Length: 104
Image (tube, rainbow, N blue to C red; front, top):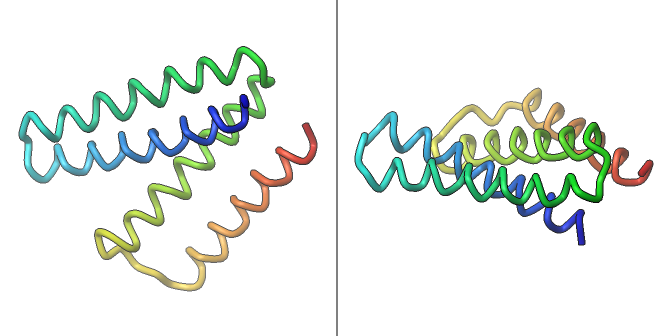
């Protein structure tokens, strides 16, 4: 269950990052709400996951999910570059996350 909580924390980290982009573009209260709620839920779920999982692994996985998720949202929603190098390094991050899960 802690791993599901950690994955959800990573997903809400991506929501918070989307909120940062919305604030930068629109500077409206709704944008701030997405940012604040995304990170609030993310940190809360991370805290719950940390009660069971080792901190080093949980933080690395949470950060990896946020990094990959933010990059993918940038590529597919906001038109960021989709070159093969980005895709290769995203695959490496995912491989590392899976490796951390298998090792714990």
